[in-house]
Image 1 (cartoon, rainbow, N blue to C red):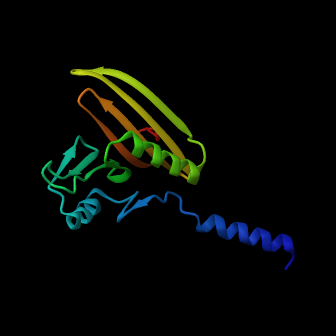
Image 2 (cartoon, rainbow, N blue to C red; image 1 turned 90 degrees about the horizontal axis):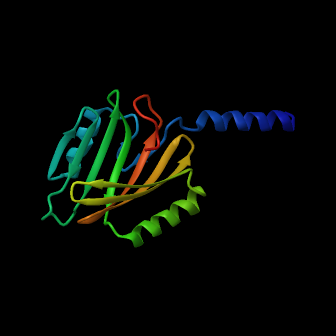
Length: 165
């Protein structure tokens, strides 16, 4: 074989082995059906699971549970296309995670600064998204009048809404 043939063969094999949409967090991976997500959630023993509109599923622990987990699953045509996991809200955590993502994936693809007024005051959001192959990995920090929220998100392009969001 010539060097050119070997190089082309290696490139072709790499292209065929790359996943089209590959994010996977724990046993949750994009493309899962709502039923598969519900089955996987049974082993996590969340305190509550409830539907959010037609395309979402929210699994969380009650405030007195020390685990304090909060997962949001978003579906498009019954396929999982986004997963959000809340973590302990602290700006320090935001900086650490953003730094780690930047070291892994480079500069963010998209940064969203947003401020609005809600019923009890001002809400400010800073979201950053990185791209890895066809996946979007994001980090969102939200300041509310009475608290804050920090979540990591994994998304994939879909036909229901434009990723990342």
